[in-house]
Length: 328
Length: 282
Image 1: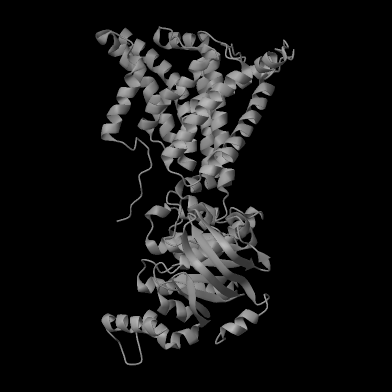
Image 2: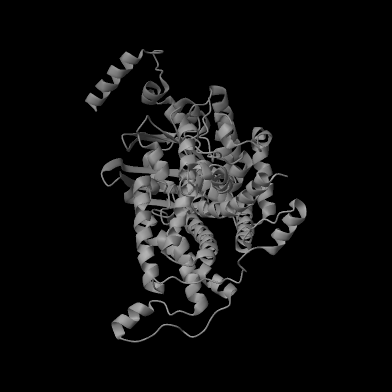
């Protein structure tokens, strides 16, 4: 096998693991958009907030300690314990459930039947609020997140590929784990929405709010449910990206990577988010590999958006976007 | 009990005989548009009651006021009471009403387009707490009444025909084991033969399953043939009520809603001027 082909394969494999992460972030958008028609601008900040909460719980940080110290002149910082990762994750899930409930109770309940643009604006407001609130609660410094997944080159992949091709691929262990966890989460979500009563209700609400109400489905409950699911997706995304590059503000920008994924896959399709994420992950790595040297590199920054633009021109509903059913 | 009674005696009837009583309700949309201006009606237990009238008369609004689906359309009941089975249900959530046995089949079917026919039916059982076995049994029952749905169970509802969608919508309502179905315009956009078929099934559900029906319908002719009692709405008010037979034979109803009169068919122009004159005199 030629060297070029091997290098390309390596790039593609790395692209696949990155793509799974993009898919994960995009999924959070799709869930909320499907069930309520809200494009949730705050999805990225939710990932940041979830990661901050996870680190805070894990390291036993006292919430709002900066605020308390500033008002009372105390010097509180830590409770002095550190929670096991799994307990901290469970705690963070509870926080995300509470967050979902509050969002429904205090924001979207009052905006029922408003124009999509108004709902969208509300999520922009929510994003900025949550960003500030997260900083106030846990502090703004960059934090290290360790969830117990080893980082660095995966020796197993290196060895296996060396035996097959005579050339060891470089792949990050953390990214492999992230891909695996994301895949499990995605499979779980698909099973939930296709085969359970609540999942069916979720799809019913996505199709027709009025009809869902008429059969006795509570929209409020479904909305709390999807925001909780989106919160859990945000937690996993925040956890993986946070473990990779530290928990800091830039984490919330991963949402921007999800936009081209959504345009590619369609805003309403769970499989679309997955396939879209993979295509963008692999696409940007391969494009950088083949075209990068010709046009000066750094194509990863814009390739996804260019691809999205092309899709907007030729297939605006995305690869798997629900076609509007029209009987003739 | 069900035919030929005057309004006075209806009002004096005990709540026992009536499953639903709507007392003088007003409905306001968006805080400004007064859609119902004091509608009162009674639905006898175990009967089929027809709500008749032209476009914009307030039939759909009345049904949605009962099921409280108007709330999600920025409407609200501002006056009057709605008593179902001895309990005031104004402002109760649609889910609570479904739990109590009142379910609405909306105008224009409103199937879940991307769900299969069977999934549509199963969402109807959303509020039920009894086991899968009972729900599966009821699914079979629905398929017995609508054999066509069994053939199409795996197709996406959005791709089925208008008649099949209407059947799906009624079947979905049945899955909640209702005591009362509010049926809005079942004949809309369906061929006459199919309309007949749907009404036949409604009639059978009424006698065999004991489901009480309140149906809004423009097709006065068909509705009055299958219903036991009827109310006629005009401009958000009840203008006439009585047994179906009595309404069918009422000269005004014949004139305005059934398009015939003792002197034979008239042209629309004559009917219109007749109607105007009638208003003028009244």
